[in-house]
Image 1 (cartoon, one colour):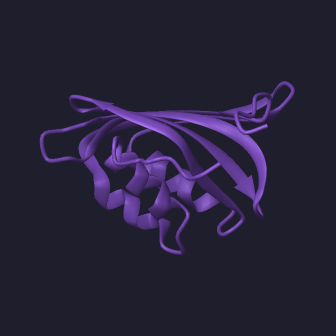
Image 2 (cartoon, rainbow, N blue to C red):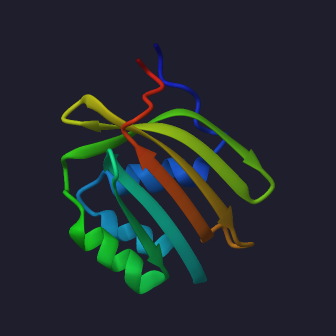
Image 3 (cartoon, helix red, strand yellow):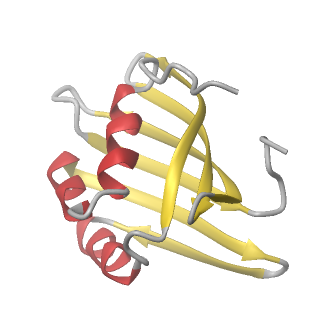
Length: 127
């Protein structure tokens, strides 16, 4: 299966590329002054964490991540107005670990105002 075109969601494509880099803190430059987010992070079963808040909480989320272990891979993406939607797969050392969906609402300057991400290993779209 070849990599899909992600030009339909350029902001989220950039977001995940930066998140997978050695300098993930650069995503803080992409958020608006009134930024809020929620990342629902499931590791399977009944285990799950809701990381949520504003800039300070995003800084905390970034600080606790395993750097260089997980990577994000696009499956499909779309844009409607200032909203982007993204379906992807998380891989650990190249092995599919979970699927995720992300939605972002951008401001007039192209920065993210609202971000909602859900991740679960219960459903894999590539298997």
